[in-house]
Structures are given as C-alpha cells and as structure tokens.
Length: 555
Picture 1 (tube, helix red, strand yellow):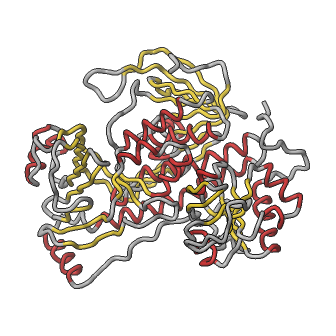
Picture 2 (cartoon, rainbow, N blue to C red):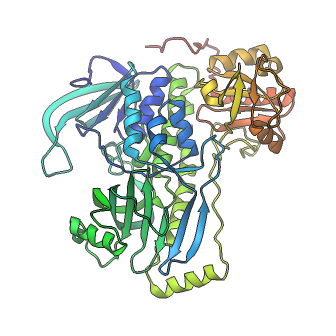
C-alpha cells in the first residue's frame, strides 16, 4: 500500500471513493489494461455490512473479476422475500429462488464487507491500480485533456465518523475521474449538480448483528407490515442479520442512537444478548434522488453519488456496480481511440432510465409495508385477503443507447436484455460460459458456426479492433451426447442457449462487455446489417487510421 498518492504520472482514471462501486470501477478498468488510482478519505476499509442484497447480474460481474468466492461462500441464497401483517398473515411472497439468466441463483443476501474485501484484494493485486486510503478530495480542476484533483491527507478523529484533515496536500492528474463518493458526494457538490427528489425521505433505525445462537424467526427475509412499527428482517449472509425499524414522523432519531433502544426493539421480537452481538447501529434516511447530470466534462458520477433509492428491492448497490461496468468499457474504447468521445454520452443515457425504473419499483414496493395509519393498514390487509396481488415488477432492461434500434429509435428485441449465461463444454471442460471465454470486450455468439464465416472481412477486422471475440455455441438438448468434444465450439450442455435463441427467433447475438445484448439476428444478411449498425455507432469515421486493441494510448 503506497504511503501517499503518486503525483508524477497521469493516470487513465481517478476514482474517488473505495466502496463497492469505486472498487468495482477500478477492478474492471484494470482488467481492461488501464491504470487507475482509488482515493478513499478513511484510512481503513469500512469492514461492516452495508448493502445486504445482490442479484445474479452482480454475481456474474464478480465472477468476471474472479472475486465471487468470498461472497459466495458466506452468501445466503434466498428462496423468497415475504410480507406479513401485524397478525403474522402472509400478504405477498416474491419468488427469489429461481435460476437467473446470468447463470447464478436469482438473489442472494450477503455481507457487503466480504464483497468489498474481495474487490479490494483484486485491486491490490493489479500492478496498474493503486489504492490510497486516508486522502480526501478537496479541489477539482478540469483541462482540455484531463482532470486535476487536489487531495488532502485525512486521519481518524476519535469520537467522530468523519476523518480530520491535516493540511498536507497533493495534486493528482488523470484523463478522467469517476466520483463514487456516496450520497453526500463532495465531487457532485464541487460540480454544482442538482438532484431530482422523488419524494421519499423516511428515517429508519438499522441494526446489523453477528449471530451467536441458532435462533429461529417466524420468517427469514422480508417485511413486517405492522402499522405500529413497520420492520424489515434480513439475513446478511450466513453469520449476520439485519433489522430495520421505521421511525414515526413524531419520533426523534436521537432517541434511537443508544444500544438500549436497539435492545428494546430486539427484545420485542424475542432476540436478546445471547442470540446476537450488534456490530452496527445507526438511523438512516431512506431517500429517492437522482443527479440530473452524471457527466460534467471529464468527470462522471456513479453509485450513490448519482442515485439513491429506498432499499425495498435491494437494488441500490447493484445499480452502482452496473454503473461501473457500463462506464469502464466505454472509457477504455475512447482512451484507445477505438470509439469516439460521444460514446461517453451514452453512459447517463443508458443508466438513468434503468436506475429510474428501479427507483420507482422500490418506491412502489415500499408503500405497502410502510403504511402506519391503522385504518389504511386494515384496508390493505382486506385487499390481500380478497385476493389482490400487485404485479411482480419485471427486471428493467436498457431502452436506449448503444443498442440495435429501428428507424424510430426503439430498441429491437432482444436488444437491451441482459444476456444469457449457461454451462458449456469447451475442449472437454464444462463450466459457465464466461469462465471458459473470459474475453472482456464484445462477444459475438453464433449458433450456426464460426461467426466470422458470415461476416465480410472488413467487418471481422473492425470488430476485432474493438476487442470483440467470436464464439460458436453448438446447440444441444439436455443429455444429448451427439456433439463430440473435438469440435471447435462451445457446446450447450444444458440447452440454455437453445432455449434462449429459439424463444427469440434468432441464431446470432452480439453481447456488450457489460453483458447486455446489443442486438440479435437470424440469417447472414441480417447479421451483417447488425454488425454494420454497431460499427457505425462506435467507430470514428474521420478517415484517419485507428489504433488496434493492442495499440498504446496516445499521449
């Protein structure tokens, strides 16, 4: 770990904030062969649980970084997320026990401290990345070709959660900067970016605790929709649990800061000191806000710096990690001049509507358990007893940006979907597709043969310059052994790809580096048209020669 930030080099990227989003941003960027420095105002990693839920897409992201192990070993693969009323009646169950399209269980409850530790280990193991704790961003200047960040050494201040600045300053230089410094982002304030407030601001007491006994609860994961005190109950992996209690508008948050307040509420549900050891207690304000600009010059906002949402669907951290994956591959292509700088405008264009949808879903989901008026709660319960079931929200997908679109700018299905990942057999080895084909750029999956055989030579060359890989996935029904392992193909072991391609009526798909489908087609002519559309969106057409994927970044 460096004693201080290196001020003698111009980094490809400056990352402010070393939570899950900032570490993901750096790890993915380093994996692409880029340099980055991560600044964190605290001198030590947080080390306690924060976000509790991740989904199959985030697990696939961790898998791509070879960082899923610690999280998976402790994660609790959930089967359901339940709402019960004050009398213990089940109002609604969300099925969280299915296999996700990403090749992983649909949803996990986990300890984010382990997730962040695995990401930090990935960052520290990459010689192109530097992690510098104990430095606070205090000044920002943008130039025509880069960013200058003034940072000041910060040290722990006993009795305060905020570190103390020492006056020792340095200036860092980078081509771009990503602010992952949380809901109270200093970088966002420096940029003068306003936030859209969607109107949800409520105080909740959050208590995380280490399990000491094998106690049982009436249900494992979900909401107690009791108007007297709406409560959230969650596992945080296999060894920790979380409780969240709604604070009424007439209650003073300061009255819930003492351990005695937490023990009183835990005692009401039969949990005592023999059962758990609290490790984190705070009153947290749940809010729904979105920054109106996520890109200002060469500076980007990501994670909570760009958006916050209530926790009722567990998508806050997931959304931030998607931000990082989305932005990293675009910055890489622009830095190497394999794509034009206008590609960076698609970051907010794509991520804002996706996050907005998740925020609205979270808001609507939270309205039902958060009813505190007794009469309204009784009316709600009667609706559910009579058979009312709100529609289960669909997983949002990308609706615009770097996608195959029609003449009206509407994405052509399945463009914008999260791509499928299944088990394949390659050379006699059976594993998830991304493990056997760990390329980090676009992936062209053809179910008829080598996709290069159906493309023009110029298309093959230009796609290769973008870092694309070409994979033939031989379709087979489950248990079919007609395909031998000597084929130059990935063999569809479980029929996962056969079902996906058949359901969409296509035989080839172009998958983006962030796992989303750029577009899909059937037949050679349609495939070539699809490839031309992608190249037209990404590749600069200035007439100048472009560097290949292995060319150095111009100075």
